[in-house]
Image (tube, rainbow, N blue to C red):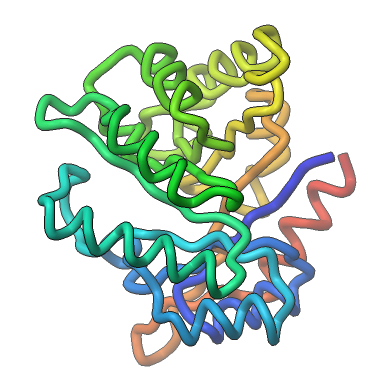
Length: 234
């Protein structure tokens, strides 16, 4: 079974994702800068009104993934609120000053988030360390999954690295075997089946976005349905 996660930068996008048949979203805002933390009211609406498995991006600002003490405190408060609002998971990512996985901070946030799931996001793709070493660090922190493009501009371009990561999780310990690699970046209805075939992933992440006349980026329900239908045809 392939799990689909739709990246939704607004309530309208979340509604479109549901109309297209999605059950799980990554909720954020300001997708044009890679996504930032959404409003509490939006989280609550997606969880309680739309009934979606809502994974909340927790990122206080654009830019690098090295956070100041004040930003870390804000992230902690956001995680606590996400838990209270009923979010299913939070999506985080932290690097050290030398662009390695920040194990101490990640582990601390995973412990704070429990029992919510924790996805480590594409900060992984900017890490200056061996992909497998970085994956092992993330798993050691207790994260549930890794969102990655295989350290390439798109998941299809990074398919070889993603397959290497998937193979590692499938052939290691029982704990590691439960860890999921979530392939994302440039995933579309037209290439999702090729991506799955090349990588062996069981989870994919796409925005299925369209640009409205006013320049707003929004999830397209038709594309979401096409993505899911193409996966179900495998």
